[in-house]
Length: 168
Image (cartoon, rainbow, N blue to C red; front, top):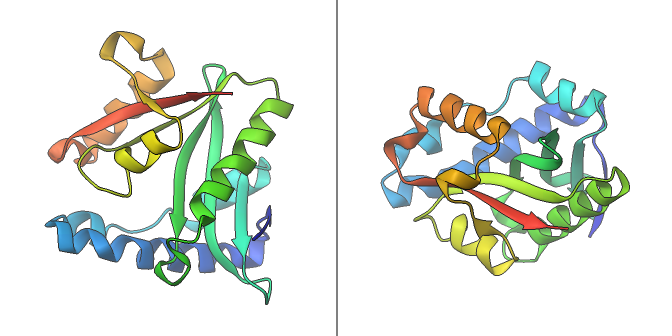
């Protein structure tokens, strides 16, 4: 699986990946997540312009998954990682996270962080298998508290969520 920086022309394809990756949430009685709009092109461009929008591509060099991240309190915070269902269960998400960890190390960052649903099998349980650990409320940095507050404003706390961290 080849991973590289996304191009501006690929950003609409990333939105399509996000929509497709969201569909399985419907089977978990989370239709609001399944129907949630992906990040806007402007938001994706902001990550891309900062050099933190990476894609995993197929043999035709077409994106099948993507990851966007930004530094938050000395860690690289994974804002979104999405894998198209046709590429799922092949280690693509793991490869993107490994790639992000390598970039974070190069920048001198100490960890990867993310927020995720606790009861979705391909969310918190998956990240735990990859070495992420759930942070307690006391372990949240100011930036992570702000991210969680924004998520709550958007209604994501309707389902149990946590912050997780993997040291580098």
